[in-house]
Amino acid sequence: MNGRIRNEVDGDAGIARIILDRPERRNALSRALVEELKDSLALADADERIRVAAISGAGPDFCAGADLEEVRDAVESGVLSSLEDAESLGELFLLIRRMDTPVVALVHGRALAGGCGLATACDLVLASSNASFGYPEVRLGFVPAMVMAILRRSVGEKQAFEMISLGESIDAERASAIGLVNRVIPADEFDEGADEFLADLSSRSASAVSLGKRLLYQIDGASFEAAIRAGAHVNALARLTDDCREGVGRFLDRRGS
Image (cartoon, rainbow, N blue to C red):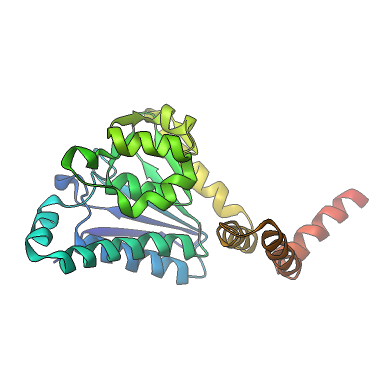
C-alpha cells in the first residue's frame, strides 16, 4: 500500500522537503507512510548535497497521529502486531536522532498524538501561529509511550506529565514557551519564514552542524566528565575539517586587513 510521501529535493539549495501527503486522513501515520518516511529520511541523509531535511504535511494539518483503523486491526491481531507497529515508529524516531543531517518539522494546523511525537522527535520545530500540539491518547485509554523519552527532554518532567495526563491541546505560543517549539511564525508568513529559516540553516557549515548534533545527543545521560571528554574529541575533529580551516582563515584575513 502506498504510504503517500512526496519528496522535493533542491540539491543546489541543499534542502530536502519530505511532505506527508494524506490530507484526506489528516496525514495519519499508517504503517506504509512510516516506512516511506524512514526511506525518504535515509536517502536525504545519504545525499551529500543535502544539508537540511524538512518534514511538513499536506492539507490543513501537519499530522493527526496514528492511523486508528490500523491500530484497531493491530489490537485485534494480538500483541505481536502492536509491538511491530510500535517498534517501526521507534525506529523512525531513532533514525532522526542518528542522522547527520538536521531535521526540521514545519508544523501548521494540528500536530496531535503520533503527529506531535513526530514533530517533537525532529531536531528543530517551526510552528505556524495557527498550529496546535497535543497528546490526546489518554482520552482513548492509551499512552504516548514511544515519544516519552524525547518529550521529557524537550519540556521537562512536569510539563510532559501535564500534556500526557490531561490530553489537552496547546497553541503554538504555549508550545514555544515550554520548549516544544523553536520558533513561531505568523500564519500568513509561515511559508516564506520557513523557507528563510531552512536556507539560513543550509548555509551553515555542514560538518559543524553534523558534529554538533552528534555531540549534543551523544552526551545525553553521560556523566559530566564523559561529556567533557566527548566534547574534546569533537573539538579536535572539527579543527581538521575543511570548513573550520577555511572559516578560521577568513576570520584571520579580515582581522589583519
